[in-house]
Image 1 (cartoon, rainbow, N blue to C red):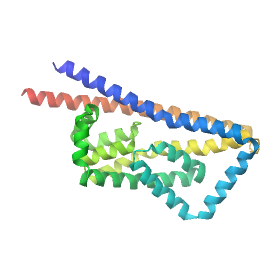
Image 2: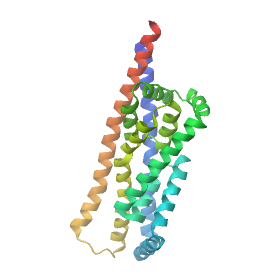
Image 3: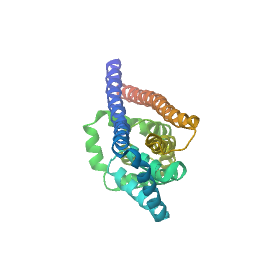
Image 4: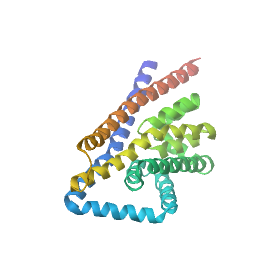
Length: 258
């Protein structure tokens, strides 16, 4: 009986995480398509448009970054994929300031989502989990192995806000939750790099970028490397999450039979 239950949980989790990975790929595809359309439509004018946007952001000073952080908190708390905003940050603010802005926004958004789940949304979330066995299994596993599994969940391609709401309703400690949120930093940095590199590629395509070909190849190679790294990390984290869930289900099954 246990083997059948274990297989069912594993299949359910595999299907759930596979769908999450498929949905996570959509923003990258959309960004690539929009970049291609922009290059074709704007042609030689694309460099002018990029410079105009950069000048506008510079003139805003720190208020521009603060407004973006506020938008990041509101949008991601509404379950908008943070990938889109990270790519925009990389294109608008550059790599360094872009990473700083999205990490700050991610921590503030996580804290808000945790508080909402703990104080206002716990009952609705628990009702929703009753219809989502995969998420319910993750919640049980987090209750058993809090910090380790929190970090692993952040390394998968699950929507960070979904995880934050789930963890807030689970009752994990806020300090561990916030530290676990920092595990998102590598993925956020990679996504910001996509936006930063995408802007450079657009300038290359316009013919106005005066950079060495070796540097251009490094930029393009960096994008490919980032994709490979993200896929490898998410796969390792996904397997670890599935193993933790299976162990939790096994422990629960053993306790029920005793």
